[in-house]
Image 1 (spheres, rainbow, N blue to C red):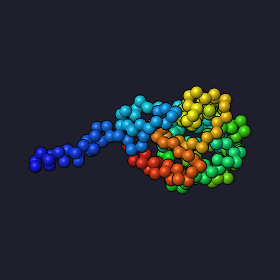
Image 2 (image 1 turned 135 degrees about the horizontal axis):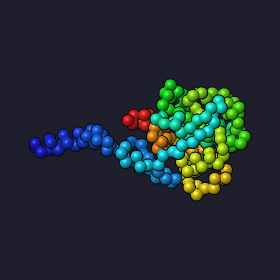
Image 3 (image 1 turned 180 degrees about the horizontal axis):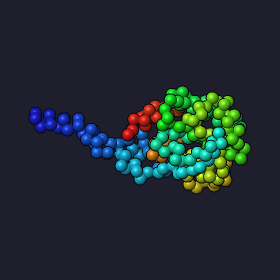
Image 4 (image 1 turned 60 degrees about the vertical axis):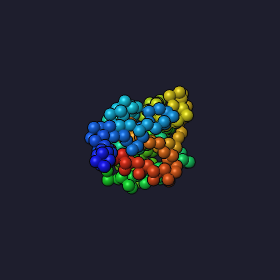
Length: 213
């Protein structure tokens, strides 16, 4: 009987011991490849995982925004263009649910990269912000050099699963994918930005991510 009691106690305290040792497995998976194969890892093992590359683009206020502005913050990325009549407005409306939920948190950012930067000027991005009521300071609408945005989208965010590393950087990029990135620049989730249910799932995943230390 004494042996059984000791066994039960050990089973009960093991999760706390592993948590303290840094070996606790994450509740949200990590993604390291364009096929989005999920991996549940400890914080130590996650250090070897793929991270979003640095960048420097211009936002809707004409300010330079780089990867360093997102360091230590959770960010949600998507790709759009201001004259898009189809999926882009739908994505924007679904992402506004995140703004409503997390608008008072300084460590959560929304980042929308233009896939038509040759026409999405700073004034056009500013008008888009006003049209949808996007919160300035929380939501970055970015424009820049086409090849750099496309390379970041495909090689860092894996924005197109079927394309991955092999896609021609000049091929037009149009995707409904929304990506969740943690404070260390690791990919932690992929969602369909046109689906309200995925927006709700994303909100719950952000809450989980915020609890990670």
